[in-house]
Structure formats: C-alpha cells, structure tokens
Length: 489
Image (cartoon, one colour):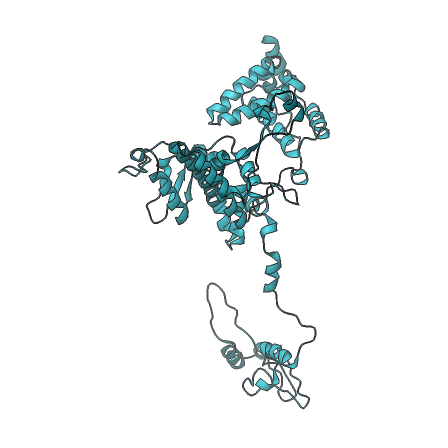
C-alpha cells in the first residue's frame, strides 16, 4: 500500500489505477456475481438475468479469465469467428451489449479504471436481418380463430390407420399402436371431425366442455393479441382486476413491471373485444371471485385473465398448418406469436390510421420502428394510392383543354366575366397570364409600393392606400435640393 501511494504521488500511476489494482487478479466470475446482484436490484426480470448470465459466461470462458484480460481485440476476434460460423448481427450485438454493460458497472464500482470495450461498434442489423415477420390478412385471421376454437376438440375425433406391415402380420404380431397414424386435420374436415369427437365423448360431457373452453380461450388469446398489440408476456401478466369493461371506453391497465419499457400503459379495448372478455369471465366456473374492481376503483382480483401456455408458438404452428396458412411466404417472412403484433401495426396503417396514432397504439418510442419493422409493406395498397395522382392525357380533347384553361384563368370566353384577369385577347384570341398591374400598349406602367409591416407597428393598409400615400408624399430629391439651396452651396 505504501509503495502504491508513492507511485501515485510520483504520478507513475493514476489514483484510479491504484484503486482498481486489487481487483485485477480476482477471478472474473466473482465480479460478475456482484454485477448480477446489481442488475437484480434494479428490477430486472429473471429471464433477463438468465439471458445475461448465459451470454456473459460464454464470453468469459472463451476470452477473459480476469479483469486484466479484458481486451477489445480479443472480443473483436471472437465476434468475427462467430460471424464466420453464421451468428446473426443481432445476436452478436447482444453478446457485445452484455459484456459492455458489465465493464461499465466495473468502472462505476472502481474495479476498472476505464471501459476497454467502449470503442467497439455494433454490427449493422439492417443488413443482416434473419427473422422478418409478416402480417396476417383479415381472411387469414378469421380462419385462424375458427381453427383455434375447434381444434382441441377435433383432435379426439381424428381417425387412425394401421400401417401396412405384411411381415409382422405373417409372424402373427400385429403392428404396435405407436406406429399407427392419425388422419390429418384440415379446414374442410374440421367441423365434421369435431362432431365425431362429441359422439365419441358423449359419456364424458365435462371433458367435452373443458376442450371447448380450451379452444375458446385460445381463439380469444389470438384475438386479444391482434386487437391490442400486446406482447405474449404482457398478456400473460394481465389479471382480471386490471380490466375495466363496464365503462364507456373499456381498457386494461398494464403494470410497469410487466411492460417492456417499464413505464406502464392503459391499453384501450375495442367494444367487441370487451364484450367477448365480459362473456368469457361470466362463464367462468367461479364467477364470485371475478369481481373486476372494488368500490375504491382499485384492482381487486389477482386471477390471470388467460392461461397463456409457454409453448404457444408450437400451438400456433399447428393451428396454421390446419388452417392451410403458410408460415413462411415467398419473401421469407414468417408468422409467429409476435407476428400478431406486426399484424396489429399493419392493419392500423391499412385502415387509414395516422402514423403518430399508430405509434402511440404500438407504444413505440420511435416512429420508424412502427412504420418500418411493424408494418408489412405487402399489405399496403400502393397501387391504389396511385389513383390519387392527376390524370395527364397526352392527346386532350378540346373540352378537356378548355377545362384546363378555365381552371388556370386563361379561358378567353370568360374575359367578359373576369375583365381584370385578361387585359387584352387581341385579334388572335391569345390570352396573357399576368397581374392586372402589368403594363401593355394601352396602359403605362405604374410603380406600386407596399408598406413594411413590423411586429411593433403593424400597418394594415392596402396596396391602393399605400400608392396614394406615396403620391402625396414629397420627393426626397426635391427636399434635398431645397436644403442644399437654403444653405447657399
């Protein structure tokens, strides 16, 4: 310690370097454990902490063992190797952000003198976008809701077929049931298969009711995601007490802890969606526990609105396959659960909603995110927008040409009605587009002066009054001549 104090006093090392010297040889895992405690204290979710830990530990294992080993060139080399392996730019930026945040905290905690990774730039994600989502059309959404409601029950009405295994049957061993296959569900056979399931399960009406309610819940989950723009995690966090369905403007209160930007929002609900949610809650097995709000107007029930499964994306894939909706289109854009939010933003744009209003509905901080990422250009009626442009005929008819001249005030037939617009048509019938004060053969030019209007003394005189005032005002040259003669020069 004394030796270090002498070095600081001699300006061999800086005070910051002296303060961080004791941390340089400590294993980086010990520092990172303290950093994770700091992140948790700030209110980060468990999923975020787990993702941060996974990425950082991989980097530490491949590149850094202690704080003194952290080097920008090592990290850049590691990122280039991952790029050669096919890692996307967004994933590489996530790794960079994770370790850079750790180094920033180390500087604040006086464990590092400076951030050695601050100069490393991010990769361009726009040029290396791997997952682009597409919007679903209105017809596709209607079909998806129909399939989602019937498929849980229809799964029990599918017919099975035994495989053709002649060798097993010759030996007297029938094929195992694990090798049997079920008929593929399609949109055309969905209703008939669901009716067959009801007949098979006629002795168990409670199970049939459970399957029907499960299908109703899935369809309502899809509809809520599309008509509100909520993310899957945000919808899963909603409780019955966060809904206001009886007022003139129904809404849902999204808590700050459950929202991505940690601000909290009021999500407006359309009337038909509010009605569906009201019916859904009224049909619950225990309606007495579903009082939406108490007398004080605060949340009164902590029961989740929906049971959103973690494997919702796999359920959506099966529903898309049954509905005959392609998961990936010809452009390579895909449909997943978050694509329902893309559908929300795109349908707002195609419905004529202004960009600023759509940004507020999407709860985006930047409007380019709403217009470029969450708006599918394929569904925009660009061809129809061209109809708003004027018609430009290369061979106009006389009536069309006369209408164009009338619109610009150059039609000589209106000279009598508008004598000030056309001063002289002449024998040739030509009209001259000019202001009425322009000189011609029968009228000499006149100078017109306009008063200057200032903010302190606003003069609202018309040009005609300004002209008269200038005529009555004595000339400056004459005044100057009088003053010169009066002085005897």
